[in-house]
Amino acid sequence: MKFPVVPGFDQQAFSKYLKNTGWLFLARVGSLGIKILAGIAVANYLGKTANGMLNYPLVFVTFFLAAAALGLDGFVTRELLSEPDKKNKLLGTAFRMRLLAGIAIIPLAWLTYTLFKGNSGDIPVSYILIASCIGITQSLSIIDSYFQSRVQGKYVMMVQVTGNLLSAGIKLVLIFSSAPLIWFIWTLLIDAAVLGFGYLIAYRARGNYVSEWEYEGKLARYLLKHSWPLAFSAILVTVYMKIGQLMVESFLGVGALGIYSTVVNWSESWYFIPVAIVTSVFPAIMNARRDDPLRYQKRLTDMYDLMVLISLGIAIFMSFASTYIYQYFYAAEFAEGAKILSIHIWAGVFVFLGSASGQYLVAEGYTRYSLYRTAAGAVVNVVLGFFWIPLYGLQGAAFATLIAYFSATFFIIVFPETRKQGINMLKSLFLISLIQKIAKR
Image (cartoon, rainbow, N blue to C red):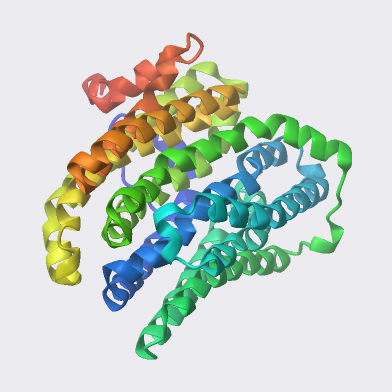
């Protein structure tokens, strides 16, 4: 796979490590088109109110799903890079931990919804229970950590594209069959199950056996000790990324959530790009950190610049395209989403930079700072949303999210150990470092 020359960047490093990113891009670009078309079809079929009822259970249980992941994915990838001979113990231990956590969140989600459902009481508790079972099937996604540690993104591509094709096909069958809402609720669980078993099949196809996995209590304690800040951070990330949708439903009703969910789906559909890039270049960053501190810093800066270039391009394009998207693809009752999307899409710039700097924090062992900055983002989103959503409606929710993402990404400037990276990100954001690179050529 050929990659274009980008002025100012280490092209040799790009050619070596972004081949894996290319596979991930193929996977997610294909998945993106499929999911968008299926999402549009489902939203138009259900209407804004039923679409809100479909999205609410998934948003609600997302907080519990983040907790059930235990922050293990990225940490296990790092451990597999350091000690590949411990593959079966690492995967076996992490899988059992995630499986037990996935089972545990089901009664927790039910109890929380029962106690605090408020205005969402029209949504049956069975919808919440179905969505909460996703945590069990997602325990198999720990296999993704193995593929990432081996820089084998093409297997992730196969699983994701196949899974999304099946998911889209099921939804289209339901639409043509005039199926009731409950069947679309079940697809939330089916989608997760298909991906989980897809990872399992891909793992076996590479000559690996789940039967060889081992659970080790001492290793479980070690993983939990080092991953809990990442787990808590993931919960807080979910809070500041998803709390806006719950607040929209609480203040404006389920119909408004149906509109806002389409906006969030469009914005977040691009977030695979920073994940694909940082996941693929993480081995390169770790190797440079070990062997060449100067190259390590350069690769970090290159990554920040690349993230800004891509995210700005997406934000500008989507800002202009939002009107046409909602005019030509959605029913008239979703029209308000165009204006909201043109605001919300800019939060992606900070998501891209936050993903890049997150790899730096993991590499340096500054996991506690991931916790602090996501906590800051969560607080900002809740506080601003509480005041702005009642006053400004969906625009208030979008602006609250935008500022929350900025706050979370650049909160590392507060800490002396990470301040330099925060400043480097600011230079990338204002294109200063990229201009300096081009000027030196």
